[in-house]
Amino acid sequence: MQPYESIAGQWSGLGHGHYPTIESFDYTETLTFTALPGKPFMRYEQQTASPNGQPMHTEVGFLRFVAEGRVEFVISQPTGQTELLEGTIEEQEDGTLRLHFGSSQVVNSTTAKTVDATTRTYTFNALRSSVTTVFHMAAVDQPMQEHLASDLSKF
Image (tube, rainbow, N blue to C red; front, top):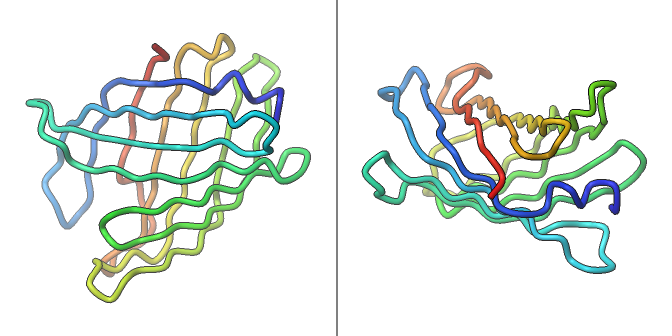
């Protein structure tokens, strides 16, 4: 995990959401990646709020570095979903670090809206001072498509 400890910390900034079944919206987002000494994983927490500061969404989980270039993400949400995502982590020639989770298994509680699949991409700049996030979702009888995107800075 050591090469990836540069993503540990808090990241915050603005995001935008859209989906065919809802009105488009803006939000602020804070991501926290916490390194756990001696462990091959990080704790993850995400929180969003409306532009006027009202809480919107939160999720928690673990980012697991399982093999060279391979990573897993286990996420739990209070809306009744859990996600198990598998993907890749690679440092590009320009120094950016890209985590792409293209395979997911989503489990929905009996009272949750149905989410069938998700993908997530996190692109950290070469200085590890900013990250761009993109979240795609197939849910409520809609095909896989972009739902959320944000630009965050480390603080």
